[in-house]
Amino acid sequence: MDAKILTESYAISLDQADELKHFRSKFHIPKTKEGNDYRYFCGNSLGLQPIQARQLIDKELDDWARYGVLGHELATHPWVKYHEFLTEYMAEIVGAKPLEVVIMNTLSVNLHLMMVSFYRPTPKRHKILIEYSAFPSDRYAVESQIKFHGFDPASSLIILTPDQEGSSYISKDNIRQTIEKHGDTIALILIGSVNYYSGQSYPISYITELGHKHGALVGFDLAHGAGNLHLKLHDDGPDFAVWCSYKYLNSGPGGLAGCFVHERHSNSFDIPRFAGWWGHDKVNRFKMSPELRLMPGAEGWQLSNPPILPMASLLASLEIFHEAGIESLHRKSQQMSHYLIQLLNTLDQKWFRIISPVDPNERGCQVSIQLKHPDKSIYHQLDQKGIIADWREPDVIRVAAVPLYNTYADIFYLYSSLKTILENYES
Image (cartoon, rainbow, N blue to C red):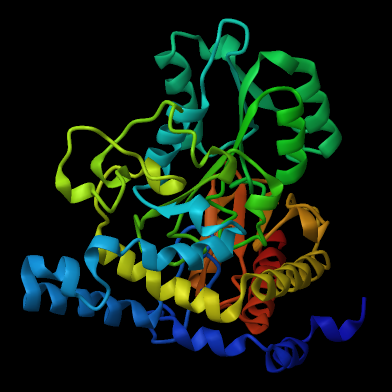
């Protein structure tokens, strides 16, 4: 490795050459109590606020004050169809057709709604396959669905485990062997596209093809994938996917979620689902018929009218993504995470190991640093140096260099700070 990589001037030169660097100015950067910018590496948990968000929210508040109920038709973005203003932008981000995407509810709600439709167990085919260390809410939802259908998670839940004990990596061969082993007993494969703990991204197309080959339906939780990976959901072909928008998509705490239902299910109105009036044919929705006439595509899974203020906040971010382009952002993300891993690998490895994959095609923004001697004081010392990272029990510091607002200088500062902390820790 060229020694110049270990210099701050090299990081600055990378920032100067970065064609996306101007997007940082579109976000509020949190300040330390001294008034300096934090080095913010927590976009995998909560994205930063787009500066435009307040303006768009204020506009809706103004329209509410001006029009009252008439804002449903007269607002700048008429409220009755507000979710439609988000659809094409979100479809770009996840690689789908607009017909296949809708913004609605929150992540775990959408996960349950999708399992109502796509987890249809039988006495022979009743198992759900999830990955090791799935996000707890996913596991809770899956186990509750299994119980709801009268089965026992002890026999109906399959855990896709790492290749080796003490590792967090799951190979494609391991995935294939697990699916082949359980074969025609699997009703649903539900995988997090990026594991929240290790940062490993799993191959959506490969898993989908294997699952369908063995007669299973396939869905993905894209909580850590949407706005992070260069997704191609339509081409990859899973039956459904769900995601939140408050991480890489910067919609704000508790922001709205997204849902993808593949085009092949668009006119399958006999699929079991929970229904609400916003899934009704929009032309006739307000005729208040007692007979439900579902819309085709993902919109047909809607329950309620759109919450305008959270949608305005999300629109502010999606407009930035549209301008920057998800392909360019993902390419920069890979470069930034590679640079971070290069720097971390020069430090004394007796204190930690990087559990995120080396292959850039198997990770996104997040790099997970697993401490060999778990001591949360190391994480707290990073905070004292003006770095906002993320701790995940029992022993992982998660850092995500987000291409929209992080800089290479941020990464170098993180590396040099951790280097100082570990040198003092050792002494």
